[in-house]
Length: 301
Image (cartoon, rainbow, N blue to C red; front, side, top):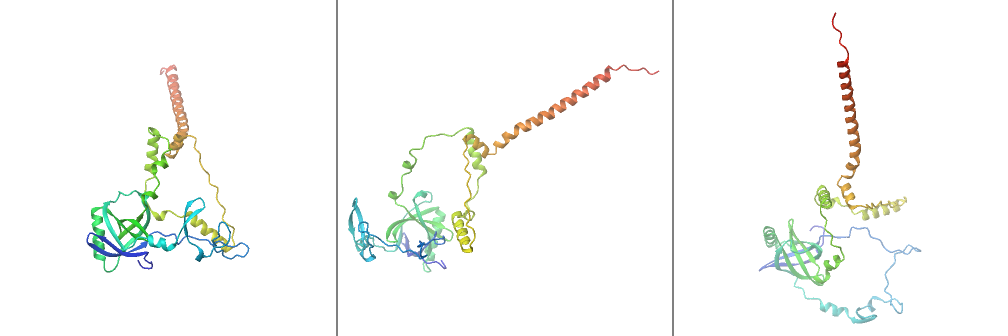
């Protein structure tokens, strides 16, 4: 990828076929506005200093090490070299262990996406893997050491290349049963369900990432610009939160039925007035007709 530095270079292996590949970060926060911590009195940037929790004395970097808490306030000292020795050896190879249906992996296991591209010498093998996966509609599960840790990676066809997503381990993903265990069992049906389905059908669309703006980032940009130009800082707009007392009424209003219900009495009254006018006109015409019949007719003389 022109203009970008590969985060990792190695090989991908499927069967007896191996080709060189590179990983590039697919999503990054580097373009976000960032702030430094500043000393208010001097305007200088503040440096982070590590302080001993008991003596409150600064601890220089060369005197720092790692520790695992075994009891409250009691630590097992582990040297950084010992940690480095525990890192699994890497052969720089993403070895594909299985091909699975693309929908088999729950999104909750997704960690971080990377673009997987071939090197100049492995384009044919890379393309064979990509196109074979496309035709078979499968994803690949591979394992390798990435960034000092053994990682499981999900590989899927993506445009002209592949996308490799590191996966969370099972112990890292919290149970959904525990998250939802306190939810009451409620079954929605009848008019309420029909209205919900109707609202959903009127809001159907397609996902367009460019249509969603980072409002917080935009607000920070406006704040920084105003401060640079010496203008008044933008004030936060008050958010009006609606609190419907009746879910059914709220659903009806969302479906566009609330206003219709309010308008119906007016239209009914108007129609009634129109009907009454027609009835009065009809009665008037009938009265005139009856009068003309009752009047004595003069004979021609």
